[in-house]
Length: 355
Image (tube, rainbow, N blue to C red; front, side):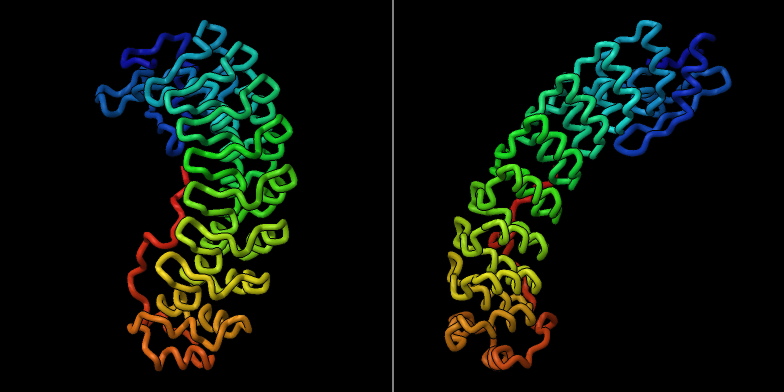
């Protein structure tokens, strides 16, 4: 660690180089040394928990890393602040040359941090393709799991890094692995609208109708988030348009609840059943009308498959008959300002899948 004492003359260049680079959150901002190359006296201003090698590696300072290694720095020294090694700090930021240098010096490519992070997981999640390739070439475990079940493939898929996904699949990543709650790389790509990644995963054998523990599929996640192009892609690849969750909600009911007109239209065009109801007896039309999504309700109501509007007339008197008549006659443009009520979150919101 850089101490509060004056740094030895031989180390002044290293201290100056390290302290000239600021790191963005979550990467620690470094304080400047004074004219005697010492750090401030105040404890709260010291870069506690970071070794010089870690900071230089995380900053991408190849020459400084080389010099520190030559003077005997421990290549796998663990930063007490985050339990990362210098290799992990460099991989996180995609410093290919530093990663290469540390690996050549014998850095442990599969060192696992307390939560399960590895250098490959960090590089893949940020889309650093050259670093991912380098780590894989040096034996990085491609399907290593975080404590909650995330893999490098899931992180790259979630962030839409197609190049990294392709590298991981080429190295044998298991496209069928699911996280502890049951979601897969395809579900993450679908939720975030990454069509190119989803197509690649499907080409490599991802199950388009795989379900989470609660019955949610990639199609439902795409519908919830309003990704109509993704919805069409999944349907083109064989997704079941009428598959339901454990609470009997279909993708159309999810789209109606969230008021996503383009998604509802895509589902209806592919034969979504407008008369299916979820576990409380709500249909897609009732959902859209109840929560003020007039355009979606009108789109559903005009489908030939609906039976004389009977579905809309069922139950829930708070949706007035006048509004119902206007809706079914196509005169209601948008009832959101008058009808929107607090949505019961328990109904149709998939669990957050961000990490």
